[in-house]
Image (tube, rainbow, N blue to C red):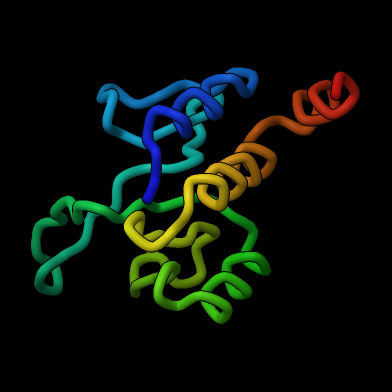
Length: 124
């Protein structure tokens, strides 16, 4: 089960990461670019998007997305809105804290400016 406080602390330790408004949210961004955000889905075509509890959208490279979808379809999925978009949908009740934390750190590397990533890598 995902430990929200641990994930929030790990993400906020990364340079320039900003958290969403809610303590329970796993919504993060770097310089206005989303790393993760709540999943909103349409119950009907052209209907209003509504929050799907327990599902998070996480930015990732397309190659990684395809691997995740194939390797663990019980945890990772997409829908028509996310097909072709570099983010994967994650069922939070089926992923371990360490795995989600690693996925979010990868998202940071995708979104953060290259100069910032290089600076962090040089310091580690």
